[in-house]
Image 1 (tube, rainbow, N blue to C red):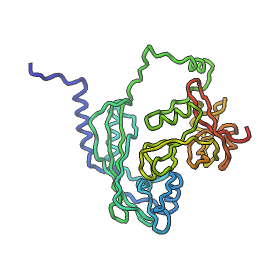
Image 2: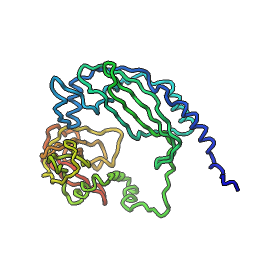
Image 3: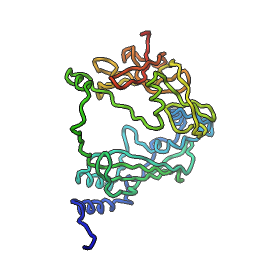
Image 4: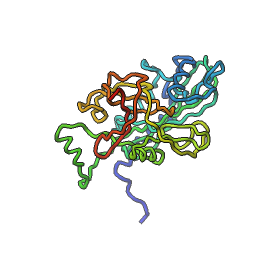
Length: 331
């Protein structure tokens, strides 16, 4: 006995593919590009308003762009960029041809080297930094591909953006025989009714919020150091970094800060009407000053308006899910 063992079936093929994928490391993922706009105050203002960033360093004649805007200055917009390299296309073609046809973004990392100020011209290039060995995840089996973009302002290094995706073959969906379809789902299906709403992801950071919802209370986090209110729930304060916090209960009054109407793709489970048609999703500004996303009920979707006063309610969408919504109009 030598202590060796047979390689699992398909191992040689896997190693051969991995070797071919590794050859792409260090090759260009995109040719040198130029930002379509100079760093500018309007984009900085819109970003800050959307993100709730009130840092005074981002306003005035000496304004700097929020560092997390780094990638925004490299984006091509709806017309896009035409700078994707042949190597990148070949890499994806190789993975697609081997059956790894699905893709999901997994994470990104940014490093900031220089403040960006209005008037800066942005240039950038990207390379394929690494390809992992084959990995098995809950989604399926595949390879992680990391690209690195180097961003420069007026020719000076300004930052680095790493973006990682998983190219994979989806894992087969297995339904154990012991798992039974809930009666409510069967009834909905037999009547041609709407599908159930997807369940929220509850973790250690937001469990307290959903416990409050179960008690018909909308809880907002309050920093234990600077008393800043924040929503959604986070493990630490954006203002001072303190990780101590308590909660305050929202009174329930608010106004529509902005909204969209979802027409397509149709998703009946999210609709607030029995017919399952279009529905309004709004960013609600609560009287306490924080904002949260929620459905607007009580008025037709096409009558929802910015500035409309709304009132918090709790809606049971099906037997085991209740969510906060906001009622507009007089009803």
